[in-house]
Image 1 (cartoon, rainbow, N blue to C red):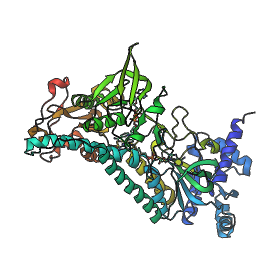
Image 2 (image 1 turned 180 degrees about the vertical axis):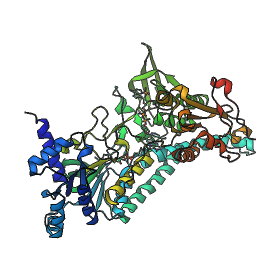
Image 3 (image 1 turned 30 degrees about the vertical axis):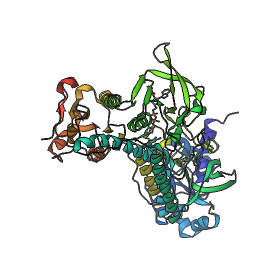
Image 4 (image 1 turned 90 degrees about the vertical axis):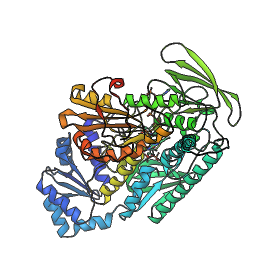
Length: 597
Ligand code: FAD
Ligand code: NAP
């Protein structure tokens, strides 16, 4: 028979008592509860306080506690699974030394204060911060090889198969463009310019190798134990770590942080896992990919398509619906248009249905069959490489979360947490890409990890702020943004309450090279109901990432249109956005060229 609601609640209360060295059932406004919490703080003892007045089922929990302890009131204090009592009894126990004995004699001996599963952006940041505060910390990091066998070192997605190699390959493409421009600036050279994939890959991989090494050294210096092993929960407070050779070891900890990140999703069509690659394979590909089909139209797809085309490859992107879902669509389409005018081909409203090997080789030859999303139309073509970039799945389904009762969102595998990154199991926290409804960005994972450690061990109360996080898509013409897309702002505030300002601009660097007039674009969205506060900032142009960072800081400080207008620009730069015009008509009528003065 399934447990009743009451039995479940009892189980939850018991779990809180069992898993916390000090558990205080409290009410936030109660002065006796505050005294007891202050006592534990003054003793340097961490405690977990459940504020019953802030829980929906607070009064039911109080009844369960009454049943368990015979005590109706709060605070209701447990130390090391032993019921101590209310405020007076706890103070008395402190005075006569029995409280201290409970700590000393029965202290649950865990192997570690904190075990972190996942040594990527979030996990490493959290581990180093916790260790710096004197905690005994262990990090487990393990890379399950891709279907084609690609694997990598310590540091997670960003360092090995994400931000770092992506930005460096983007840079390779930008240099190619600069070479073309350079003739206009007087450079004369005779050699035919060619790009060498192997040279670029080796240089980037060697840099990544140095970062992997640097992370290991940093962990060692901070006395964090690192194990190259796959971690999974086996019971409360206990994990199994399995290394490459299949050797198993078991470790316990008082607290856990799950930071296992995501891995690329496949299409589930014939031939995808056998013959296609993902971004996990691309950056260390042993051969130049040649004529490439990129499937997908978000960050990863457009960035990879952009730099592959930029180094001279024949690149086609197959788009199921729209570019960069969730981003401002005017900006996304402009970023896509720029790619199209710079040699990237797009097949829109199509999805692949099969991939067949025609010829082995490095690269080989593949036949891709695709069908229209709008009708029965079928097309086929041949490519050397098919890069699948259709999203990423959270690594949460094979790590034993169900064994300890941590809930995930069954639809997407992501972990719901409260505003202090705590899961539904009080001693298990989660950070980074696996969080439900949060941003999947390296600096976000790092910030969440650091602040979590400071809250757990440093007495801090600062929470990670997931609002107004600036980001940049490193497409050939970079797209930086912070705050709302125009569509989202309209949905939230109504068109009539918004003022949208925008401008086309021509970077000075492009003028002499006679390139890309009328392509760079900036837009800000202001909330008329709130003093014309800037609630959306968008820029499409060179170095958009560098530009957007500063505007992100300004928006955190509450930037308004008036303040923006008062800010004197740095001349001549792309960031001097003071010439933004009100958007009262269609863009083609009110756009204007942003020549330098
Ligand atoms: P990860 O960095 O993915 O780390 C998780 C680690 O846990 C991995 O090493 C994984 O192998 C390991 N692991 C998983 N399961 C287990 C287990 N059971 N036991 C032990 N170890 C395990 N973000 C940006 O901010 N800017 C960018 O320009 C950018 N570019 C990107 C480009 C690409 C191609 C991709 C794919 C992502 C990019 N991102 C970018 C996103 C960024 O990489 C992630 O947001 C970030 O790495 C998330 O950090 P994390 O700590 O959550 O996870
Ligand atoms: P994503 O944002 O989830 O986008 C998935 C893309 O694949 C969408 O274009 C989607 O199209 C398409 N798609 C999904 N299923 C498909 C199918 N069956 N057939 C064809 N197309 C399909 O995934 P992502 O690009 O992998 O990015 C993941 C996360 O990494 C992002 O959220 C981002 O935070 C992070 N990231 C950041 C950066 C950066 O900061 N510069 C760079 C890369 C990645 P629809 O629109 O039709 O659904």
